[in-house]
Length: 366
Image (cartoon, rainbow, N blue to C red; front, side):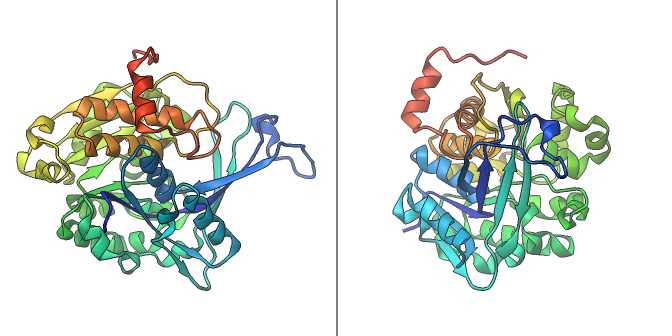
């Protein structure tokens, strides 16, 4: 039987060497040897990060991804089966294509750098999906078209075909992104054109602020560099959200890292009718705009924080919470996530997270 939520798209093996003893400037040193801590690993990518977070939050979820029959693929399947044996049932093993992996470089007091290999995902597209399962779920979440070359090639033909087909099947559609490397094929794609074509078939679209500025406001992205989040204002976010809503989705938002999460929704009641499928009242979301700050925690690692935030948002939507609580839960689940070095183990059960929210958990007022 189909689950409430299907998370499809990119999954990888995250390899995390403990580099907390190194300063950022020491990471690259030709001809030098540095002693570091032990290595750990977990699964990464939206299918793992968002899917396993939803599972921990008590949401019935199917994971749909592809791996090769190599040791990396076996490790990925074994890892997700460690949460629940059924979670590996829809991860397909494809021959003769290396599984995706990511090396996470995260020195002391510095944001991570990711070295990623797409591998088996070079050919991922609509024909890799179980459409019967997709038709039966309430919400279909696609992770990282930016890492799926067949989807963004040819002006987004594959992305459009997938989004339109899933939308026609009936579930609520949701999409998350990753930040392309500027000189990569994904970084050179016409993302404004791709989004204009595909977003009319995407109900919920909540990328990070860096990702969407790279795609739509490249001049600001490049000019502000590492100060993008610090330069955000309410007016800038509202203007950018309005631009995105004009492309066709029903709900948009931006993951703002340490500044929290912003959400906005269409003022067109008909465009929000999809909310009825997940037990929400469309009128309650009509033209809303909200922001919630991040919660204060001790940061162990930021890997997967955005995916965890998206899981918190989806879980709150499925459980019928209002738009303000949806933003609040997104920030709460992300905060739990970054208390662990990997992308999944920090996320807590729904009841445990709710208890934490009901206590004195500080969040700054900005």
